[in-house]
Length: 166
Image (cartoon, rainbow, N blue to C red; front, top):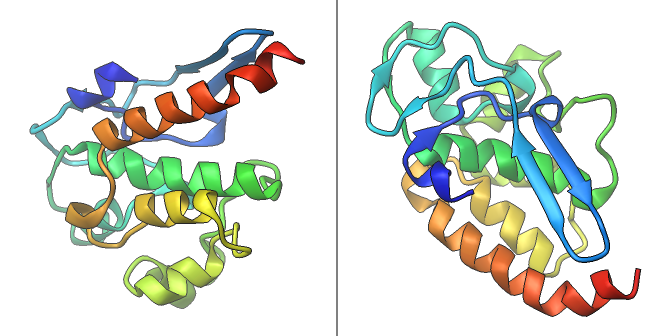
């Protein structure tokens, strides 16, 4: 996770995240680094998964322009992934983005209220807030990787007893 400060994966989706759980640790590894690059590099994206794409990547693809690599791109995708995992609605690798309807898809990536209405975890609570902070349309208002690491470390401390008892 600490490497995400310097690199952008570029195609985060459930199929590219490997989980491991044992009595004392939760392990997460990423795979498929075809779209990965150093944060700050400008790139034209060759391909991405429409179900998990950030608004700025979608916009750059529509305009066929380069996009500056930021960790906010991955934070948005991770928010979609975690939202579906927390809600238990992760189904066959598809996110909540309506990729089958171009007008609704474009709206979801440009209208914050509409996007949040599509997200799982509607019942409220800290997970909902966490997912909504990651899935903000404006990349500058998303939580940062540093904030995510802090939150994960806190969750790990509070849930450590839960893991030991499993």
